[in-house]
Image (tube, rainbow, N blue to C red; front, side, top):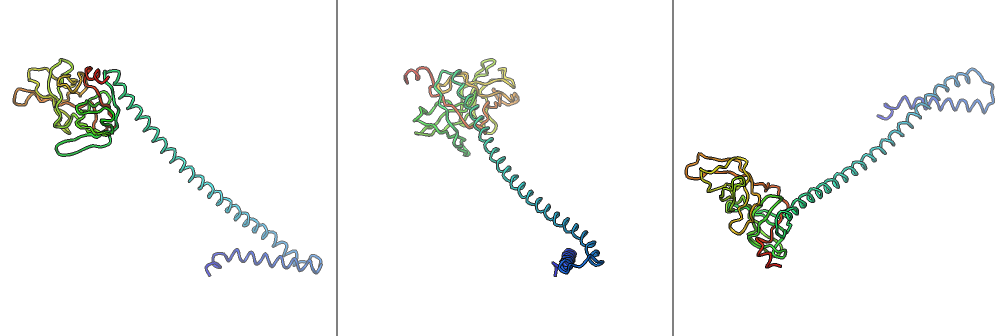
Length: 279
């Protein structure tokens, strides 16, 4: 019932056109001369034929457009997939490029320090209430041992505190149990850099009579037999002269962003004498 309501006009035209065709066929079979009825039928058939041709052509064009849209939709789907694949490849290439840049900066340390360098990747982080350590994927099999300095780029990360065959644990300089002999590079004032956790580091045992200002660079002093002289530790961010006592309270921001460290280098010799023994 619904079908006839929506298509009654088309059905009427088709029925009428069929009747006209039957009438014409009858006249042809009777071989009668063209009469008034035939003329009327022909007059009505001509516009009906035109309307029918328009309808058929319209349906044909609509079907062609539908097929074209289906084809375009499939092509768009394939193009989106290709774009997604290319984006994934681009991310991989960018990651490889950035890693190559980081490794190149690490290997450039060889020109600045007379040590053998072992490049390692950070594979884990230990977070406890007492200690924050870094786990790397190199160990005694690669020449690593406890006490060796660890760096990332130009900055000091910390030192190896434990090494197994294929992995090693690094104590970062921001750990509260870390202490490093250091000097203010500008005027050679000596002190101890102690880890302060999320606050970075503190430069301790600097008397209030000393000249230390914000922006001063802090480097390792070479004393203590662990860290070579001149390794970059960080910069002074704040000097509190109002503290009670004899010493300044000096805050130091490490030159290494510990939240983003992915690769490090370990200095496998602490001095020339050990290097000579190794040879």
